[in-house]
Amino acid sequence: MIYTVTFNPAIDYTVYMDMLKLGEINRTSKEIIYFGGKGITVSTVLHNLGIDNIALGFIAGFTGDYLQENINKSGINTDFIKLKNGITRINLKVKADLETDINTQGPVVGDDEIELFFEKLDVLKKDDILVLAGSVPSTMPDNIYEKIMEKLQNRGIKFIVDAANDLLIKSLKYKPFMIKPNNKELGEIFNVSIESYEDVVLYAKELQERGAVNVLVSRGKDGAVLIGENGKIYSVGSIDSKPKNTTGAGDSMVAGFIAGYILTNNLEYALKLGSACGNATALSDGLATKDLVDKYINLL
Image (cartoon, rainbow, N blue to C red; front, side, top):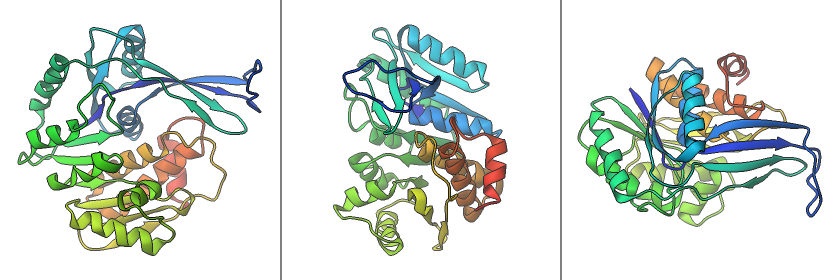
């Protein structure tokens, strides 16, 4: 089974307008509600591809109830913990001449609720996949990913880590099956500017030497590069079209990679399906659907 973790999910209220005028009343042309958080996005795209999974994490208040109800309606399995206080975040995403995001803080997670989350992890077993994606809320321990991986190490569980900076670096000692920094995050880890394909390969290999089994680097319009556990380097381009929606494209790539790998056990195909999913999200108003993925995978 695949499990995703979203510690601080959100209802993303996305509004569209031609131009955002600061200090004035703005009128939208369209509004769409998405259910956000990197793990939830991974779960959604996996479900769209026909891959069963369970979304873990925390929800709170009436917004948390609304989020869970609608995720379940779409067919995604959840096992969220309901927090005693606060509400699940509502984030505002403005799609105008420039994309503008206003992300809120979210509820406080207590020690007893963290302990309850760790108890839920006891069901994971050999060959299960656990996706740890995104930042950790300021109300939670900043080493929570390490604690999770420490608890589950030696069980034969495959860890997927999609996080930045210390969260990613500190996961390497637990030999995650796949990590997915983007170009910018890869450069930040080594305090360098990533300018070329050769730079990507050089520094991605360094992360592999530090413990990652497979290193997938998303490069936006330049595609993606995978340093495989078999010693091979794979690369894929992107669809030559103006993106409509960059939110969730990287998470969609993670979902596609996982789906491709478990379906074929082939790293090259996993990279290609991951790229198709990332492109399908970037070139549509919502998240990647199977029809769009089937269309784009033949164009890569």
